[in-house]
Structure formats: structure tokens, C-alpha cells
Amino acid sequence: MTTNIDSLYQEDWLIRKSLETIFLQSRLLLDNKFNHAFFTNKKIENNPESLNKLLCNNSSIHFLHQIHSKKVVNASQSNYQSIQRGDSLISDKHLQSLWIYTADCIPILLGDINRGNVAAIHSGWKGLAKNNIKSTITKLEDLGSNKKDLVVALGPAISKENYIVGEEVVSSIYESLEPNQYLETENILDRMTSLECLKINKDKTLAVDIRKAAQKQLIMEGLEESQISINKNCTFSEEKLFNSWRRDKTSSRQWSFIEAR
Image (tube, rainbow, N blue to C red):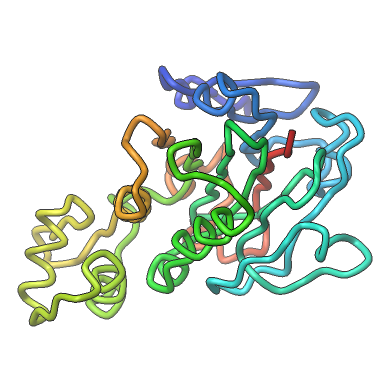
């Protein structure tokens, strides 16, 4: 059965095919000269070394043992010889390719258009609740980046329609968006709905939009909407193109990377 890639089309995103591999690229990152890719489940081999050879020249490979945290790691500290635990990588040298794996969580790639530094974040609801986006941007600033010079792409993740969660998850994400506000649970649900991060279904189940929440966190950190590109593909519903933990309960993931200039 062939894979229909028409569903991947979005105006601000490109679909690429190389041999048996299909991946996505953000025009925002490409226009600012950042080599990157969000891979689908259509790939030759599911490891950074093989995928790196397709798109990168002499860049070193860096990845993490991901733990749903806000820990940020300098890329030089984590590679095949010593894999660190964390959920965000930041380049600290030229020509480093930073790799993260996801299967419903958001792969977030950031680039500094002035300095050429990059970052890669794995962020599900736990990462959002722990403000791992804020931690990453703070670390980039420590290395000399200015927020106005950042461009960000949020890749394929589970959609709001398919991400049904409990009240505790909604509350945890809400607290990351308005940390100084105390609301009762009912008011939190109303507020999250008004923020467009939550849909309350007719059966009273709660559907969360983690990419919208991530976008709001980025804006809270001082970025403009024009600095952020959001992919709309759903890892849960597009079974022929993406792995999904919630759908399949398997360890299969898709990789994403961004390369420091």
C-alpha cells in the first residue's frame, strides 16, 4: 500500500523525498539558511548516523537520552561516546547536528540567524509544564543569542483532536502559561479554552493543543509570531507517515535535526 503524502502539504513547509526517505522542512528555517529536517516514519534506517549522511556534510552528531525534563545540555557533552540525559540540546561549536526523537511530543528546532547557533527541544506536556522552552532560550541567551534573532519551527506532533487528557495535565500546562494566577479547576478549563489551548468535547473529555501552548510559551519569552513556524500534521491520525506512542504503544520514533552553521 503506497503512502499518500498529499496530507503533508502546507504553504510554509516543504515535502522532501530522498530514496525511500520522506521528511519535512520549514521554509522559515530554510530561508534563514538552517539545514534541518523533520523525518517521517519513511526512512532508510532509523538512526542519526544514517540519516545524517543524507543531508549533512562533516557535522558531528549529538543526541540525548530523553527524560521529559527541562534539562538543557551543551551539544559537545552528549554524543555516541557519552550520551547525556535531558530534553534540550544547544550547539556550542560550528557544524554540530542536534538530533531529537519524538512520537506525539513536539520536536522544536531553533536557530539564531545572527550567530548560527541552534537548539533542539523534545517537548510533550511534561516538558511544557516544566518550561523547557524557557530553559532553552535562557541558555541560548547565556551563550550570546538575542531573542529577536531566533527563528523556531514546531514539527509534527499529536493534534488537539486526538490528545485527550485529564484535568491535572490541563492544570499543569496552564500553570506554565500564567504562573502567577491561581484559578479553580473549572476556571482553568475556561481560561485554557479562551487561550485556544483546550477544547472541551461534548462528552466532557478534554483535548489539549500542545503546539498552541508551545507557541504561547515562545511568545511569553518575547518572540513574535513571525519568528515561529508551526507544522499542522498529526502523528496520531496519519498512521502511514508517523509513529505515535498513544496510538501504537511502541518504541518507534521519528527523528528531527538542525545543524549549527
